[in-house]
Amino acid sequence: MKNLDEILLLGDINIDTIWPVTEFPVPGRDGLAPTVEVEIGGAVVNSALVLDSLGLRVSLIGSTGRDVWAQYVIQKLSNTGIGLSCVHGKPGVYTGLTFIIVTPDGERTMFSYRGANINLEVQDIAKDAFEHACILHISGYALMESPQRDAVWRAVELAKENNVHISMDTGLEPAIQRPEELNRLLPDLSVCVIGLQEASALLNCRTSEDAANALLSYGIQLVGIKLGDQGCLMADDSHCCSFPIFPVQVIDTTGAGDSFTAGMLFGWTRKLSLQATGTLASALGALAATVYGGGLGLPHKQQLLDFLCSMQGDPATVAFREGSEEVIDALEISS
Image (cartoon, rainbow, N blue to C red; front, side, top):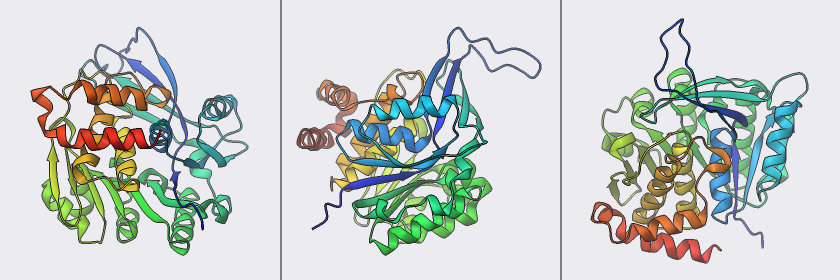
């Protein structure tokens, strides 16, 4: 019998440079940064790194250039347990680059060159990649341009042929620029991660409850709605739970949503309760916001365990207490 436990993640593979500034400059002025961080990034890369650190089997599907940045990305990822056999180097194009400006409130503004990411092709999607997969997770950005968009639909086709579940993190720009592509995928999803702005663009929903109900009506099994400093809402076909944010000092929100997504995927694949899944996703998102950048600086298992244990007696986190115990047990089992 096949061991169907691998998570495939399809999306952009980037180099992130993080520039903390005292304020976002007006046009024509300079934004001076006292330091700069260079990290591997991209939504699915960030999620994969967190899932790998939590003990799950994960593989990336994507493309880079054949430049010095590609060498840097592959070298860093090769030191993890993440599968890279479906990452393809493309000649004549640069690896994706993202410049991230971070202001003192932790808000980040991104300037992205997607580069080689959009050059992922249909023939790059290998059938055997789906043999041991339990779920294919797709970044909405991968649906913005072809040939990458065509490769996504080939991956969806193979997932359905192999009874592999499908997940998507919609992303704001894809929801605004390519709503027809994202809406086309919704009926095929088992898991959906979305923000309220995206829900408004895709579903014309104004509240998180309305968005959750609309998504569940497609047959989606697990919905996570990110609400920024208002926390999140989790829903399945029998429950709907709201979660506040964990009380942390926010430094940079880069990678927080991707870590949240990793928590949802862990919860879904390990059949955790809605309370535990919301607790895990919220804790991972909160921890990610306490450091600059994403990539290898994102929360790892021991850091997460220490954080959850430290919060057990805090009155401000009483909403997470029940879920924390289940998460801690699940993480210890996955060791």
